[in-house]
Image (cartoon, rainbow, N blue to C red; front, side, top):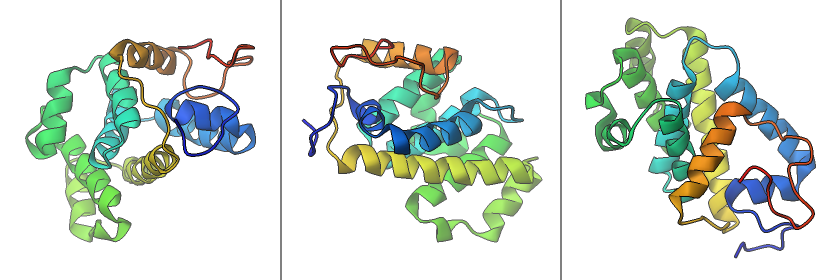
Length: 190
């Protein structure tokens, strides 16, 4: 049960966004640009950044949702577990290792990112845009994690819920589909 009265019964960030469509719209648009827009990082790589930040913040809903999305984009549990355990030894490129390192530092505190972290990423082939967007994705997911957990939203236990959500995020993205909520308050995209 969330800490405040919402106008729907939806779990996690979905319920919060549906509760405040005026604030949800710019949040969704920014997320769509960062995670689904044209980019030199793949959608899986960008979702991996979101997932590691959510995992390190202890946000169960966002970790489950974006972990399921990583898997829907071709990743697997082994990849996720390796990244959670130690990104520097995970089966990802050196560039992704450096970007995940930056994301992890942003998750702790933005000032933890040092010039050496940026140089490591550039030496591994990361562009300024990739570094910029890694920092922005990490910061955005810190906001999401705190939003979801700070208002005590419901987190489903059934992994099938997150598989369905992940399929929607892969096929539709982060923008709200017209008439996304049915009359009974349930999501058409569950």
